[in-house]
Image: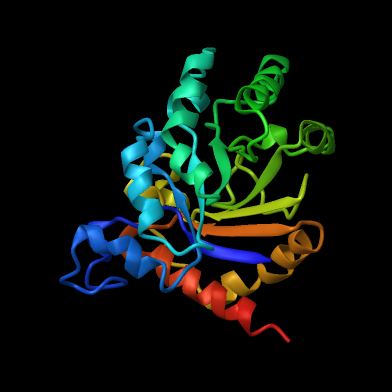
Length: 257
């Protein structure tokens, strides 16, 4: 099973592009579910999740709709060694868990989080703190992309997040690997010029061509063969480019021979 969606959905610059121009903010998720059956929630990186917000999301989505939620920056970037932070996060997403719509926690670590013994130990602690909930890890530094680390993820039952991003020294190459029964792929765009110097909106301002996406199809199928479920999310959200590319990828997947 391959589920395709975008990294967030409530963007004002999607109005008049993906969304109808006059759509109300509270109507966006309903419209989104007519096109995709999964979404990655990134707002939780900036602020801790609130039960009321997720309770409303549950009510606006069909029964088979799935959510992946991004870990808060205190958990991945500041790395506060506090069980209370993890407990508060799990409490905030409880409505998703209760509705059986929570499919995983995405821990996206920064480029400065390199493959060292203390950081490997933190991965194990992270997994221990979230318990039995599915955990997906995205690395930004290529020191992690070695077979012993994939073996470590397998032992810890952590899913590896494959990425497409600029081909720059030190970044993660576009390899297709699955380390448990959950496959995961994120498309960030290939905006090399703004990756280090621009803000987040410029960094992810990129529209993939059909050929660039089609080249990923065999890699996604490789991941699909060794997993029960594979998520494919587009994070190039500027001006609804993520939605455009997600629909293109869905078309490729649905029309496979």
